[in-house]
Image 1 (cartoon, one colour):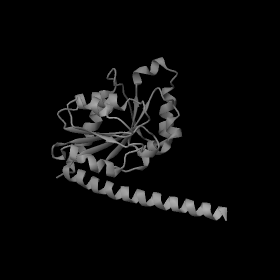
Image 2: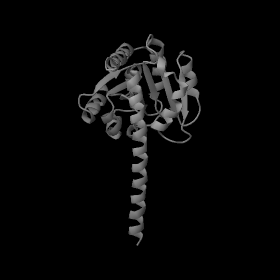
Image 3: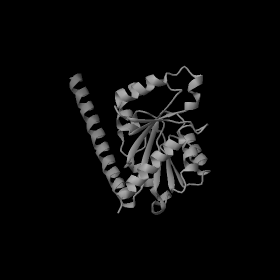
Image 4: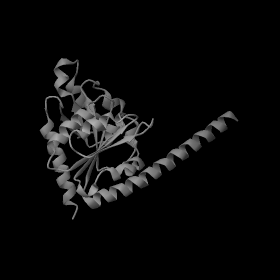
Length: 231
């Protein structure tokens, strides 16, 4: 009897999860159509807490001009990151999830009124710091970008393969610290390729600017590609 009840509870849980994901995907598809109609490139940045997403975004926003960029920032609490990014002179909307460990398409949709999509080339979504939950939620983005810092360890791709498999680009952040750490660069690169063969990897430092030009060129190329399809 207990086993039957347990199986029933698990089935109900799976059904609720399936319906939630279907609802999310419907909103994401609607968002994607809208972004495509306007020729807006949408990037979903995902990483563990402390990887340096916000610091990298500050440098990115300062140097991406004349491209028109806006940012949606996801955090469990506070608007600290959004306040930092607003100093870069771009429209920034904060999404406070109040405990939810990831952003969902509905959250993105409900905050789009805070950015002017008519005057936009790139929308960057800074997801909640988490390598697990955000990987499974479509936000209507064109591309996922995963960040892993030199301070986190070389086994992150093996421990959290889903996001490395789904992302198109991996950014190895805090690259300036590598010489001062017990960090095996080659092992990290091997682990990334083991999970996602052929994945593009860029090594960057928000502090020194190392690799920043390559990252900016990557974004510009993706914008050009997206806008070439917007006729």
